[in-house]
Image (cartoon, rainbow, N blue to C red; front, side, top):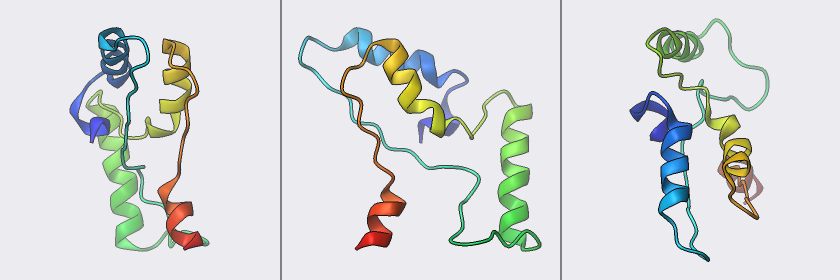
Length: 95
């Protein structure tokens, strides 16, 4: 859960890249926030509202939890090659 641990997760990824030897790789898994729903989100539900409030609060604290969609781009900008992004929700739904 890098999404909640570091003020600047991109810098953590940069340090990981800098620490790798040629041919090394990094596997990264994280949660996407706010929670996603199949179909239309139930905007009046407590779960939906909780997810929105959680994300808003994380931004105010300077540790945004909505960075996960940026990870692939950040990895590529840092210098990782052949970056593969897998959405496990799609994999599970296809099973």
